Length: 169
Image 1 (tube, rainbow, N blue to C red):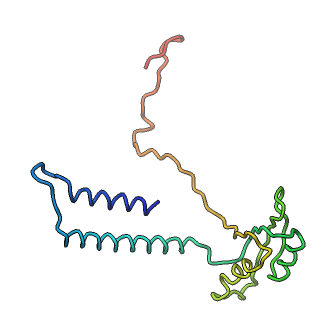
Image 2 (image 1 turned 45 degrees about the horizontal axis):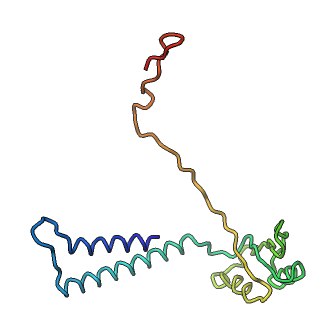
Image 3 (image 1 turned 120 degrees about the vertical axis):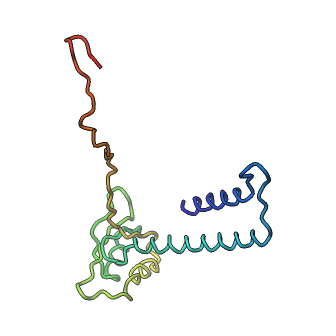
């Protein structure tokens, strides 16, 4: 989405470079100017991609702890085997879905290291019985609330009823 917006912005800049701004004659850039523009735009795109990836890493959970949902070939027997091999707890089967199970992984306090982050995930996906797995993360949602910025909002007019059957606006 951001890349598309950037592409649109860059396209607009290129079109503006050839636009007739004051009605006299179109602006024509030399080869050197176009080369410089392409270089600058390429650098901007690289920086944007770098910033987006850094932001994504900030929002990613660095921990393998918590609930995992996995689709396991072979049903309950393979789910129990995976739980025993990886030292995680098999909590339950997902209701209504065959071969989907909820696991929970907890590391004892002080046993986690930076090197162990991601090893669990790699170990899971190396197992032939695991078709699909996803770490369940909590997402915090905020409600969009309309905030009035009119200081006189409470003093606005109202409909005033003068007579029983008539309304005065």
